[in-house]
Image (cartoon, rainbow, N blue to C red; front, side, top):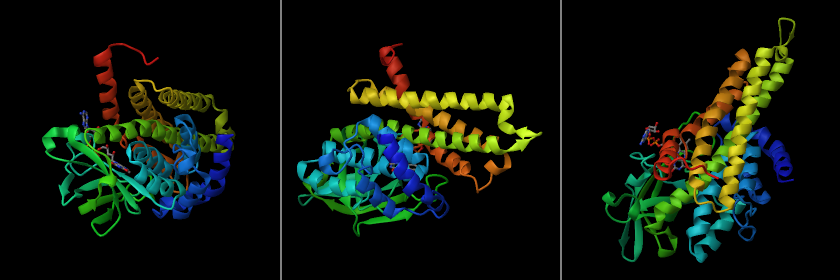
Length: 376
Ligand SMILES: Cc1cc2nc3c(=O)[nH]c(=O)nc-3n(C[C@H](O)[C@H](O)[C@H](O)COP(=O)(O)OP(=O)(O)OC[C@H]3O[C@@H](n4cnc5c(N)ncnc54)[C@H](O)[C@@H]3O)c2cc1C
């Protein structure tokens, strides 16, 4: 039912915009409001705050279905819901939650998750942004990189440190900053997920009250990692949607394209390759749905399941999209095809919300600590 509803919405409202979002690097502001009206802009947020109240399995279905039509359109609720609104709703005080989360849920406001910096992405505990106490307020200074929705955000969930950098993760806090004259944003041209407002964000002495300090140390870094663990499953669901779309494009092309007197799909070499790609997609989907279930059950090793899922799905979505492109011959390689866009989008899965190596760090730490202990 959820899947059907979102698929209908996405085929009606997302599909017609997908090419423009990518080609013109165009942020679909009205679509964001439409997703808000449907409750799927922050699908994980409780209904009384304007979300859809879905568990991670439901969120995964939403993101997978939107991504079948546009990766960029799916990244917007992924960031707005599972990263930004998630942290504010879970760690923020009641006043700030009631003030900000419904605006993020409805699409009245745009939120961004500002953790990565020019110095540090994988080594997030080494960030340089400072949060200092001055005259009863918090003063925030620093530069953030790669911030999705940064160009258009009304609220920036900024991670910075209160005190010395040598403390690493121990003194990191999350603070919510409203867009104002203390913020400057510079666009960053990226190859995929275009139209999502990727930006460098310069924070020059923004002031925040105690209410805006969403998660003080030592919980600030934990809040970031909590969001990223959930986000890794969510972005994997998005990756599965991309892979499914690429597979379907290739399948449809191969049934129509004739070579050596018959449709190309009738060659067994092609059928076997499709069988392999199909199996890869099903393996990734199973991991996403199982990781989501482990999250809902509060399983303690959920972060390991999330990391393994993200690592696997990053690899298979890139391989499926690349193979779909190749199987479609010259057309697949042309700017007219959808698979070239899907391939560019899929490549981000190997980098965003933790590179493949970072997922391997999480998994190998688990093996080192617990030995050959399986997840369930
Ligand atoms: C389109 C896009 C959108 C993004 N959106 C956001 C966002 O909204 N918010 C946000 O905070 N960030 C965002 N990011 C940033 C993203 O999370 C980082 O790019 C990512 O974490 C990698 O960090 P980095 O680019 O600094 O690479 P680095 O950390 O410098 O890594 C460079 C290379 O070194 C490898 N490496 C690093 N450490 C190790 C190690 N210990 N062992 C082995 N290899 C290692 C990495 O795997 C990588 O291959 C976005 C990035 C992109 C491209």
